[in-house]
Length: 110
Length: 110
Image (cartoon, each protein chain N blue to C red):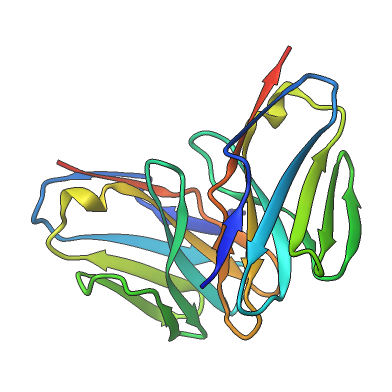
C-alpha cells in the first residue's frame, strides 16, 4: 500500500564510509526527488529525475550520486561520508502539483 | 534568486483559528503549496493554489494573491493534533522543482 517507500529508516555510520538509500514509488509518477532536511528543518532539494533522466542537480557535492534504474526507483549513494551529511533525507515523487514524500531516512555520521 | 518568508513560530489555542502567512520572491511562479510535517514524520501535502483566491479543504483553507506575492494557510477549529510544522512551497514556472520555506512551527495550547 505504501506510496513512496524508502529504506533504511535509520542509518548510523562512521565518517569516510559509503552508504546507499533506496526509494521506490508505486504511484506511477514520472518525477522523483531527493530532499535533505537539516537540523533546523530546512528542506532543500538535491536532485530531480524525470523518467530516469536527471533534470535537477542542485550543486550537491559529487560524493552524492543518484541512480534511477527505472521511473519507479531513485536511489542515493553517498561516498566518503562527512559529519555534515548528518540529516534526514526524503525521497518524493510527483505528477502535477503535489509531492508525496517517503517517510525519510535519518542519517547520522559519527 | 528565490525566497519564501513565513513566521518561524505561531501559538494558538485549541478550538481557535490561526493564519500562517507566506510571502515569496521567485523568478517565475507556477503555484503555492502547503505541507504539514509532524515531528519525526514526513511532509504531507495539504493544498495548492495556482490561481488567486481561496481554496477550502475541510478545516484548512489556503489563499493566494499573485499580485502581492502572498498567500496564507488558515486552520479552523484547531485540534491538538494540528501541532506540527507547516511549510509553504513555490513551484517555479519552467523549473520542475519546489522550493520550500523554512517552516512555521504551530504550537497549540489546551
